[in-house]
Amino acid sequence: MANDLVLDTAIRDWLLRSTNTPDLKAVKEGQLVVRARYLKAAGNFIPARAFKSRRSYYNNEENGLLHVPKSQVQNMQAQMFSDPNMAMDMMKKNLSIIIPQTLTFAWVNFFFSGFVAAKIPFPLTQRFRPMLQNGIDLSSVDVSYVSSRSWYFLNLFGLRGFFSLILGEENATDDTQKMMEMGGQMGGFGVDPLTAEKDGLELIQHEWALPKLEQQAESVLR
Image (cartoon, rainbow, N blue to C red; front, side):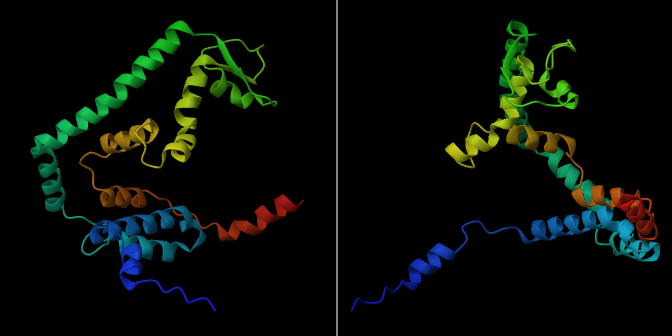
């Protein structure tokens, strides 16, 4: 009779142990932002009184979960702007992404502008024409043909999953993710995410959707 396979406890603990310990504050803030977004997305499905109560729970100036004191925001901005190394590193990363992509796009646009590079093997509607025929101003061309400029963008943003599958999740050729991260850093530089969600939640105009559901269902079922 074969002996039972026993797993060493040291190996078990080493395999199950997480190498990267997440920041507890960052996790809490991330979950709080998600909950606030759920309220913004589905706030019309609860009565106005319940919505205002929940919004006050998040946006209260005294103890709201999304409220960040002005002194704390100013300190965060001062730390970011006072560190020259952070700004220099961000500038280097941005230039390393923008310059190659700009040169490649200029090369494709100069030598292959107006050329047809590929053909989709199935029919498409007219809504796909601006996306697939960028640089070709001919309405008589079938929508299934792809211009060189559109083919460049489709390859740039469409091969991310393929590269991740072949080269791994953290590959150096995934420029699209770097570009999105760069845009997020530039767009939200010095802006606290809690403050942004608080402002967005404050702008929501509540309109209870349940009283109109019967009319909508009736119009759909007719």
